[in-house]
Figure: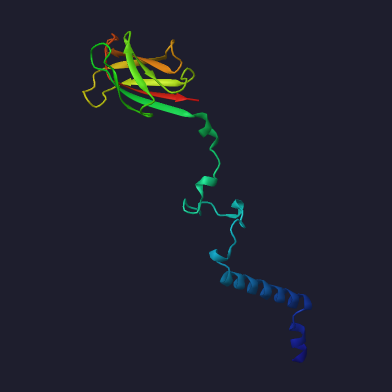
Length: 176
């Protein structure tokens, strides 16, 4: 019987493996019990070691985020709402993105909207619509950069047949 026990005794390699296993499990259990969020030093864990979708806006300092690459394409966006009832020279700026800096004047069948910077390389779109003071009428609006002033966009409003007609409009200008 004693000889049977001798044959079942673990080898020295098995004893070393068991000791290593106990030490590894004990260390992990100790770390799990002792280390929590308060014990981690700031800036000690790299972003690559974080699980996806574990951070919220509360944990992220947006002031330290860099610029989004495509965000630098547009540097200036302006808009204006112009009230232009029938009659000559009576167009007025109702609302604008930069009130006090943008102005509107009417002459030669067009309303000229003047901006604080050159808009000659900008995209502009106008839509015929009411400024909130009258019901909208069918028609459209055309825009072009003023040949006399690089800071201005000329807007021509037309009725549904394409004839020139004074009308309220909204204008947006996007500059690179």
